[in-house]
Length: 333
Image (cartoon, rainbow, N blue to C red; front, side, top):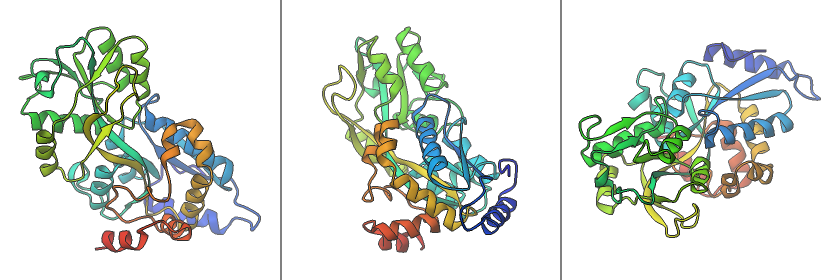
């Protein structure tokens, strides 16, 4: 059963039919679920591929496909059109998707639900160690990598530059390309700085440190306060020291929670079994990416403001996720 080209309403019916028609011994492997990520090579694609592998090995009747996409903004729009069942998202995009606000106006409210938080994403302002860019104010007049169109990181970069009072083209030269390209451009001297809001460590940045000495530019308290006032989901955090070669001290910055959302129409039992499979295989997923080593029942709700899918809620209640009833009460209002 090919699900990708169906509208969300038809999908829900076919999901239910496939499940109810399955033999008691197990489901036929004909329910396809697509999970949106980002371009191949970015962290979210690695996460999605690992999750798909775990679910395919441990959940009968399901075939999950990790889909390369243009990024988180594109993912939500694909979900709204019924072309994905699940996707990676930040806590900001997850709430806006549920409420059909912000970049996702025009969608049906309440159709995209929270599933599982993974780790925080942190705004990285990366430059070379010998660069004149030592503060964010120094980005004025520079060539700045902003992330690719369709990605949440580009929107975060736009908000940062807007908060700094810098206008594209007038005050700086924006380059809207993916992280891998930005890193290559930094190494070649074709960029002065690269902005990327992602889960640390960022593999392309770690790779860059093998070739060039880098600096992470800190975000001041004053600027963060101004940014958060207009965008409450952002929170303060540090990029740990020694995470990137040559960057020994923690770097003050800000970020969001990064995790997964899923369509309301995916059946409760199916989401319950997928959630259970992920949690029972976190050790294996840690081998795919170290972020999964930080996923616990204490972290799965981090940053979410939209209600949980009932299947995830059932499993989280079963394992005793702290604060689960408070979360349900808060997100049902």
